[in-house]
Length: 277
Image (cartoon, rainbow, N blue to C red):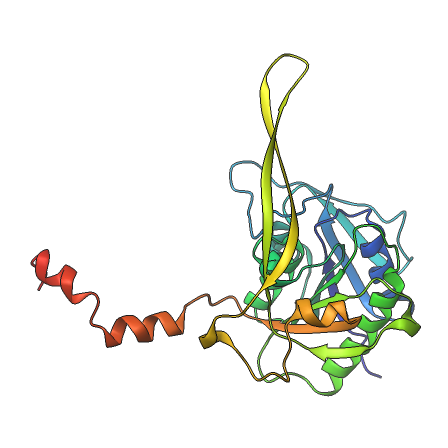
């Protein structure tokens, strides 16, 4: 008899978030071995931050989860949660790390700030294929569509494992399942924001600032980053109600930049002017 898949699930919206609960309970209901380790409060836009100047605390909280889910509330960031789970809580590595389902999209440049994506990235950095899942709305509660897709994706990844551990960033359009156009392999888009800091005064007369802003357009991809037109950006595809699947990596080296600087012998100036051998 085959052992059930072992899943580690985290997020950045907090351990009691509906998206996380829907994902964990859906996976447990089909027999998967599910462990949740998630922040004790919302930790959105924390990126890949780690807690190093204070202790990390964790305690079991199973009251809102399926009876087959073991859930931990953690005082740390999303990345902390996955690190703690893999090195301090789980007895053996999971088959997959899942993060989400996030309330709000993680498209284009957003992934650089996303705690959701960073939690999944932590799993991939440890050699485990990982999935970040986000519902592309801050108000919709249609999380079940994303949870059902996660089951199908896990099944496919089990039947046809990827050659290398990979992070798949998945965004689900906020529509009923019968309105979804399909599933599309995408590349990361680029988005521009109008950002402002609202200046306010607290009851004690102290000034503080609140970051505000909105997306106004998608930027064109630099020429050297363009893939075939058959691979649209995640931003383009989500507009047309496609579930987007974007493979991501943690190596941020700009190969194009290296090639350009190497061809131009750009660093020779420093070696000569500073008398380096």
